[in-house]
Length: 214
Image 1 (cartoon, rainbow, N blue to C red):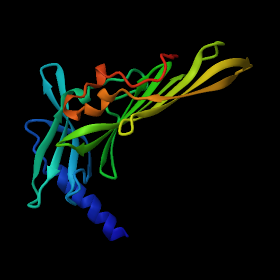
Image 2 (cartoon, rainbow, N blue to C red):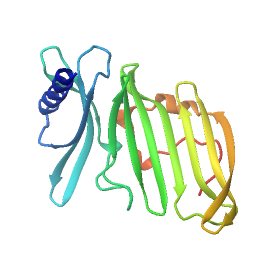
Image 3 (tube, one colour):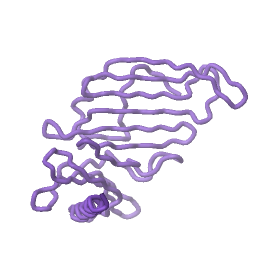
């Protein structure tokens, strides 16, 4: 087991070290097989200074049989630098590859916190959106009739989603009493054609069943 783990860590380090940086610096990365060819691919967040500005981009590199890596996707608007408010950080805050799916986690906010997870899969000659989960939370919410939390989970493949909202109906001391409201609805088909290379996190409007807000 230790030998296998060492090989995986070593090859992941090798893969990351051999992606073309083009003047950028590696900020974060994750490795895995994204196109089902059994060859390790790399997803990286890259940064570069330009005067007082920090340029940042997210890139997907496909591995080749000869140990090289070719650029598959360049998505500069999928990331930003030092975003997310007091409880956020660099965006995305976490990268993950699971079962061939690229998962990007975004977190931020202050009193009102948010967490957005987008899932992308290599299909139809591109990396397309297949799922979105958004969680909103009021960390100081104690006002009757307001929502303390809202969670929206959309399956873009099936165009179906679930929405759960916690409505504040009572307060006892420091304890908040909530009533759970659940809604199921269809997802707009426009999300099926969304590609990672065109994804703009700052302007992205997550699918919703209702206009509920904190």
